[in-house]
Image (cartoon, rainbow, N blue to C red; front, side, top):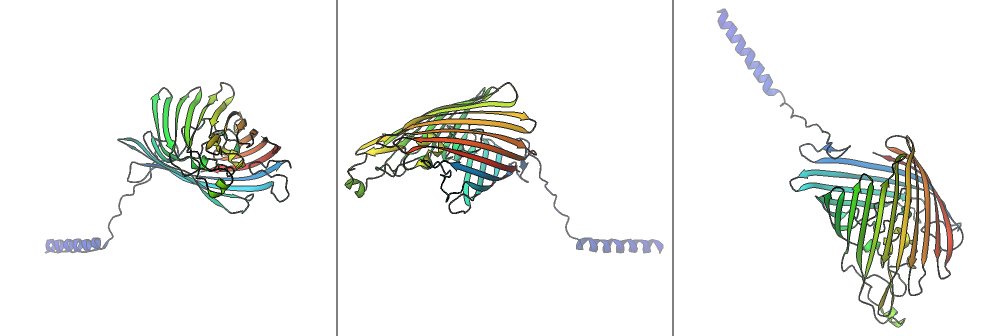
Length: 407
């Protein structure tokens, strides 16, 4: 009797326990925690459930700027011209965001990169923020398509802050297709085609406007990257296609337009490690251009329409030509402090009575790294612009105080 009672009691307990277990929620799925991906450097992590690595990046920059130009002509690249209506003192804020997605595949590294920024400058005429696309490209092995750094830009990109000192010329970052092949031992070659439209300057005077884009520009480079530094020799060609002649130009004595011309440029650059001090380097670049003004200096377009890639007479296209050179020095003078100095010279020659232009730039700064991600910079700049044909010569001075945080 006792045995029968025990069996019935145990069966009852199992029945109740089974009923309660059936009412319980299902066990949670295993959590796939984010894992660090160290194959591509710091900051990357594996996207859960995939073999792809991702890095999310951002940057916040804020600046106080003071610019002054003497009252003589010409007005320089947005500097105050000494007129009281212009603002020599203004502030700038800029926020960057972006991502870097990489996957090792059977066909090589597949990479998708994006970076954009929002900019607000109280010195702008309208005082409104502006949204910009900086980079957006896909890379498959050595092939890159999209908006990326061009392999024909100088490897020395200036150690100072002001973009107008940048001699990168075609930093339009409008790659249609670019292929880089590495030979090993630090040597590589690149071939590319790109959209030149944002780096083309066509004068509005004397029928010097560009027509629509008929053919992409092309370029090639040879690069060496080794222990002594990085060196590059590069060249580009560009179709110079004038717009159609309008009725007004015909009446003004320009009855026909030349078909097109070919602009070209060649340049060499280097960023050399110096065996003294700490993180000491010397950079240089030198360019020559025939018909591609932006190859000499990014901001010569600030003189548009006085400065152009070409100027026309009836049936003839006359190209602008010139050369430029830049030199820079950087060294770490303390544990968290870096000193930088740079200078450049541009000599542009034009035809058809349009003025020649000479530009001398110089800048120096001190950068202090307050933390690993926060950098404070104080910079001073000088520029002299001399435009022929009686336009005039003028000097400009600028100071910048910047705080920049990367994350």
